[in-house]
Length: 535
Image (cartoon, rainbow, N blue to C red):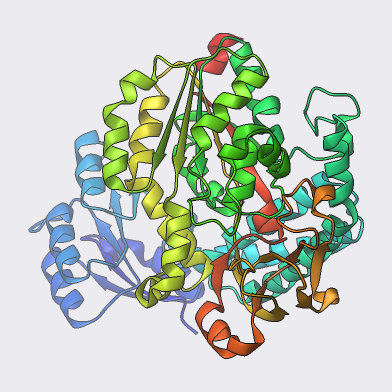
C-alpha cells in the first residue's frame, strides 16, 4: 500500500537517487522531472499528494513553476528545496503558499518529517488523540466514581471537554465512546446535585460565602450565581482597578475554550468555573448574578423588579436597577454602565459609546447572540442544518466571536488599563431524550424544568423540589413544585407527544441539570504586560 504519490522536480535529479530509494522503501511512489515545463505538463495529467520543487532551475525558475502548479493543483502541498537563504526568496515562496521550505543539502530525515507533516498529519494526530483518550478513559471513569466535591466534577468536565475538542478535529470513531462517557458523567453529576443542592442553598441562607468567598467555612459549597459580584467583581474594584464585565448568555465552557484560543495573544488568562443556580434559565440565574440574591429574596425585597413565570412582561428587563440595588446594599459607590447587545446595530451603538465607558469604574455588557442562535436552531430548519452537530454549533459560535463586536472590543480592552471578566448565566445541553410530564395550562413552557401544582411525572427520571422556599425560589401557589430534567432529557406532554419529540429532539435547551448547563466559565483577563508591570 502506497503512503502517497510524490513529484520531485530538480535539474540535478540524477544526484538524488539515494533519497528517492529511501522514500520508496518508506512506501512512497516518486515521479521525477528535471525542469519546470515537464512538471507543469505532468501536473495537468495526474494529481500528486505532495510536490518537492527545486528553487534554482534553468528555464522556468522554481517560483515561476510554483505559480503555474498552484493554478493547476491549488490544494497540493509544495515543499521548496533551495540552496539560497536569501530572505527575499523565502518571502516570495511563503507568499505563494508553499507548505514547507528546506535548505539544501537536504537529508532524508528532513524530507520524511515534511511528508509526515504535510501528508499524514491528520492521520497521525487522529491516532495520537485516540491513544491519549483511550489511556485517559479509565482514569476519568475511576475519578467519576470518587467525585465528592464540586471541584472534582469541574475537573471531570474540563477533561471531557478537552477530549471532545481534540477528537472533533479528527476522523476518530472515539467520539461515540466519549459521548457515552459524558452521558454517564451527567448521570453521576445529577445524583451529586440531588444530594447536595438544598444543603448549599441552606448554607447560603446562613451566610456561607461559597468557595473563594470571604466568609468562614467557604469550602462547604461552590461559588454560585449570587456570589459572582461579591467574590470576583468587588475585590477587583476595591483594589482601585476598573472592571469590564461581559456576560454572554448561554455560554458554555467548550465555547469559552474556542474563544480563549483567539484572544490568548491579547490577555493573560485566569480561568475558573462556578455553578449556576437552578433553574439554569436567564430569569433566575442572571437576575441572581446582578442582584447578589436568590430569586425569592429578589421577589420579597424588590417585588417591582421581579417578574413571575406566568406574567407577560419580559423576565430580564430590570437588570440595570438590580445591579444598582446590589451596589447600594454593599455600600459600593462605584460608577457603572449597563448595556445589552441583541444585534449588530446594537453592537455598533455600543462601540460608539466605548470611550464614555472607559470613564466608569464598572461596565456591564450583556450579549445575547448565543442564546438567540440556540433558539434559532430550534425554530429554523436551515440553522439546524448548519449547526447539526456539537462541533458545527461550536464552529458557528467561533465564527461569530471572530467577526462580531467582541473581536474589536477585546482588541480595545487589551490596550486599556482594566480587568476584563467574562462569564455567563448558564450553559445549554443538546436535549435528545423525551420524558413525559402532565401539568395544567398554567405550567411554564420550558422544556428542561417545570413549575406548577399537581404535576404528574416519573420521579425516577427527574429531580424535584417540592418546597421551593428551601431552594429560595418563588412559589406562586402553596402547592407549587419545581421539576428538573437531567442529562439529555427534555419534557414532552402526552397529548402532544409526537409533535414535541419531532420538533424539539436534538435542540439545545437549558433550565435543567447537567454539567453543560451548571458548570460555567468565570474568566478574568489582564491585558498582556499589565500583570508583569503590577508585580
